[in-house]
Image (cartoon, rainbow, N blue to C red):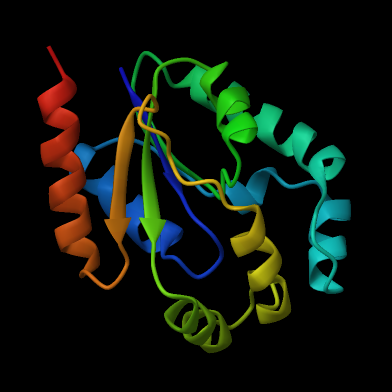
Length: 165
């Protein structure tokens, strides 16, 4: 079964959409933040962006989760900012990406409204600078975060169904 990776920068709604998608599909949802080693969370909390070396172990842990859920399917969030990061996730098996995309001001507003999250708004611009949108040869969908989460889920399920045999 396909594992759906809900991707996007901080504040894009990965947790909201991902958990709703998993509920609709009746599969497990995994939050990407849970895969970060403590050093990564500490680094981001102090306002420093992660570099590739920080991200590799995190990406490999998510890819392992994807591999473990090939028989049952699942939904996992991940910023998956760069193509090479998504390539690592694809090593876990069959994946389909739902890229949540939207305007910077909306993303920043959402981040400012969050409580108890380690990611400061000051890191949003570094994520936007790193972001490489899905390419035409990558399975998935780019969705506008200005749409309601339920509409994004409906659209994602419709698009994914078109690819299933």
